[in-house]
Picture (cartoon, rainbow, N blue to C red):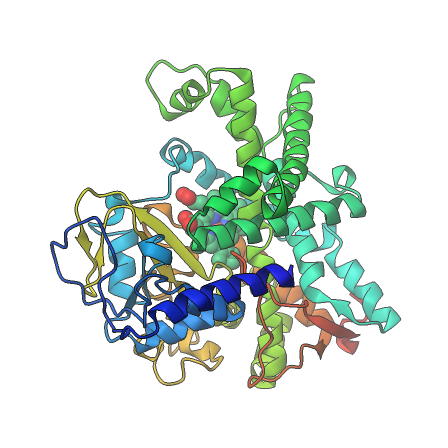
Length: 505
Ligand code: HEM
């Protein structure tokens, strides 16, 4: 593997040497078939005329989100332009709230697509389902065994990977809410591990591919079923088997006349309904005329929900617990609120501390769309986006911009979210796009907060956490993996100490 990397470096440095005598300019024009209709003010960080930003990308791939943050901070407009070899994979990335507003909500929205055709037909259905599900979550952390497993770790005195425990819990929670899976029908531990591994591999490979232009080598490895393409195919096979087993067992339950109220059951019901008024559910059914197509779509629903709900809340909680360990003052306040609020209290400080943790470590750090317009569009920052280009925003960089959050932007200060009466005060989603914004805003946001606050309060009430590794210091934050979600590298290893006052709970 390292040999392949080395060969790639040698080749790239050789190519670079050929062009070394050419001056590198800021704001240089990329090779493009499109005539420029407008001049762009997007900062273009040191591109090579042939390789674009490829060399820097390779050098910085282990710190990808921070590299982009550095580039965005250096850009006067808050947006940058970058591209791969020969102008491929052209992307404008922004950390300017006005640009995010334009891309996700205002006039620009229609000009940028993700490719999802079914959302309009299903949004109401999912929205209802998620809100209806909130109530069930309050008792979930007990049912799914998070606390008993942490209790056992505390009693034995051994260190435990809190990130892994939270991910298992997050998976159980989403399966419970979305597919009605409960303790009895859950996967065996080994099967669950294999499934997690498959999701990790598939996400990581897909994320890297989204950032790099498709090459001939990639196409060839796909045809030959070797290398990364093979690993991706194998991972997707594991995921497919799991998703189809969920769909089949749900079909069997429905066949036996059991009426479930989870999200998957609602999708299935909506697809089967025959209405005469042209309503969305009929539209949904009509999109998948054969049983096989319907099943395939239901498989996609299962995968989408697992992807949306499995890691997002658990990774937010992982960074939240690490930040509390590194900031004892905040930990004391959070613990105090957890012990004095009742289960359904608002818990404003916890809400603020979780929101602040996601400002610094957004579970979805980098997100993008592709421009589908025929002509060029100009973002409010002045960056021009042409048809076929990526238009990205980095929630990670935005949380770390002085321009957006002030001089203390790198500090963990939950109080910045509290009003004078101690109440949580939200900000505009274009300034804090952690849950996205506009018509395709996250549908699970409310549910996610309920779940995160429930788990945070339950853990804080019961345990004191001592971080074993990575070391809890604000100066030396843990690393992250380069994938679509903000996964802490190596996990969060903690020793749990049962609090005396919670001994009888
Ligand atoms: C801290 C937790 C969460 C964060 C930070 C988060 C963030 C996001 C983001 C950034 C998107 C936009 C993705 C895109 O369009 O590219 C999204 C979409 C979505 N999220 Fe969440 N999410 C969280 C939890 C959840 C949960 C628990 C669910 C429940 C199942 C959920 C369901 C969805 C769905 C269905 C969408 C797709 C909406 C659409 O495309 O119309 N999310 N989320």
